[in-house]
Amino acid sequence: PHDLNCLTISELQKHAAVMMDKQTRDYYNEGADSGSTLQENLDAYTKYRIRPRVLRDVSKIDTSVNIFGHKNSIPLGVAPTAMQRLAHSDGELATARACKKMGIAMGLSSFATTTLEDVAEASGDNPHVLQLYLFEERDHSVKLLKRAKEAGYKAVFLTVDTPILGRRNLEIRNQFKLPAHFKIPNFEGQGDNQPEAEAEQRGGQSTARRGSEAGYTDSEGNRVVPKGPITFHSHAANPTLNWERDIEWLKKECGDEMQVWVKGIATAEDALLAVHHGVDGIVVSNHGGRQLNGALATLDALPEVVAAVQGKIPVHVDGGIRHGTDVFKALALGADFVWIGRPVLWGLAYKGQAGVELCLRLLSDEIRLAMGLAGVTKVEEITKEYLVKIDKSGF
Ligand code: FNR
Image (cartoon, rainbow, N blue to C red; front, side, top):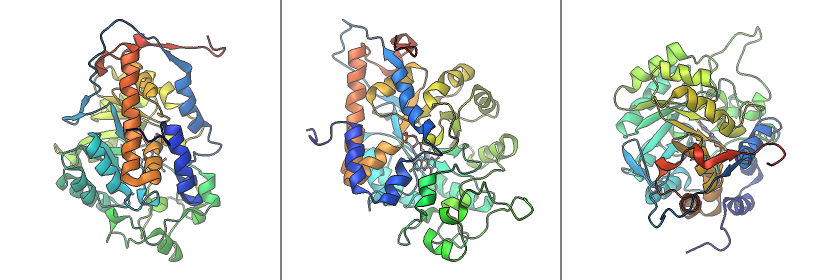
């Protein structure tokens, strides 16, 4: 049964836009600075055309792949995005339930508005991974990792493209604040934690205070470790992170129980370092164009990462995926799996759990259609022979 008002992700975006207040809509939709990388993440997909093969009996198409030891119904997962209760009162729980129903892996943001335990419970045996912002105050991260292990998370996705928070101008202009009735409960009881609004009244750093500061420094320019309330704006960015000390530390902390992935790789050089340091997988990402504006579109960064990794560890990609054919193109360029961020938030804003299911169903149907029309019946058959890049003149 179709939702006749909403047959595409772009229609979903339009419906969601009128359901959200301005602060939320701007926070979810914007990119850093002029937003050119955000736009190029989308445009990169239009530079490729599919070379379809015919007469191949596509009466049986298997869109599933294996991930974290589970069957995922399509080669796509839900990327971690912060504070989902801004979109709908059920927030991350609605997302987890929709993912479970659709057999699709879910990434949970450290800065979720629902506890990781509640999301794990709603997910059941459906794979769920925890996105990690590794804090300078290690105790908080140790506690979070221990909880994630106990709750059965399969992997930690360490976000590595946020040494400093990107400059998001609408967020600054709107003086973004998490409304006082929402909590960031993964850090409840830690760091004198409290809602962002109260934190700011007491001297914490919201966007309004942060302005264009690049990290936290004292009047002499020395690094100040954030203390006190744990808010997205005070704690997510960590400029001290480095390969040697922190990846080794995280791997030890996660032990055999949770895989360690790095999310936010955009070059062959860093992909090689990731392999060298023994991470379990890579997500090619530029944070949905919210960090370094002017960075390469993720689809354009993907081939060099794939070439560098040489199949030693899985390579995933996110950013700008809005159609089944986008998924097909990313896989043809060597990605093993893709993740989507904003479309799920739009689904949540449109109709909560049902809206997320709609989002995932639309993409699932489109992936099946793209595969069948291109002449492949299994995901692993999607290779670069199915793709051609067109030049600037369109030929
Ligand atoms: C994000 N993203 C993100 N990433 C992360 O590692 N931790 C986080 O807490 C968040 N939060 C977040 C909030 C919002 C509103 C957005 C839009 C994105 C980035 C996310 O995981 C993913 O990389 C991008 O969203 C992918 O791009 P698309 O699909 O949104 O174009």
